[in-house]
Image (cartoon, rainbow, N blue to C red; front, side, top):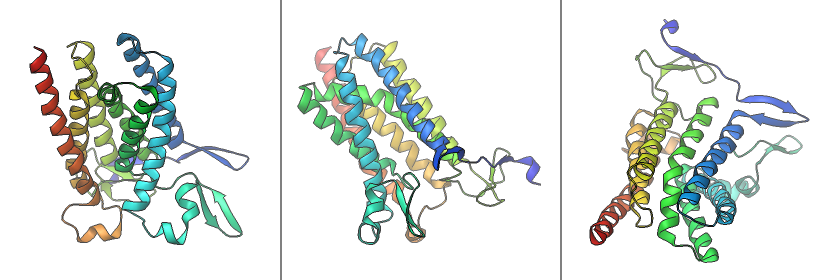
Length: 275
């Protein structure tokens, strides 16, 4: 019966060199950031923004995403870590027999990463005197592309799996069980790639100006609306979610969706005033 489904048994580790694990997750995470920077470079040139600011924005953004994603995961899903193993919250290590071992960060929350990125953008604009709405719009165009790569990384890790399904495209995540499941990571990756395509098309070919918050609003609304609905076919990530009607990912998506709606209306209002 399993031959009717997609059998998925990928080793997350590509190679181990002197005890350092090279994994698909890390490569896809870095690859996504590089591709986002490449697209941003083109946008900076088109918008005549000093290209040296891209390096600063990249550094602020990476720090904000990683710090926010890690702290968000521990705060939203494993708050006990702050008291029991605070070192694991901030460093990519875990306790093992005889001490600690390098494992990479085992748990990153996309909502926390989004908050961290927003804070990083605010700090960047204060330091560089760049227009904050324009910077939000810049990042909003490429953010779905980065999110797509992260979900592909989750797929390679066989994590954030979907609920059981009898659909022909169901994945059997062999490292989890032999139950055909929705490839929820792939659903999100495809959704985010389509959102990036739409935003880039509006910017590149419809010549919508950045700087009024419209792209930021569209990006927030589309990304987190997609996340909200795809959560319905995901397995709950932590035990306390089992008693909840909406899981933590859905509840955390609502403020982003509402914020996106506000910026969309604001962006259209600015466009109409300039028309």
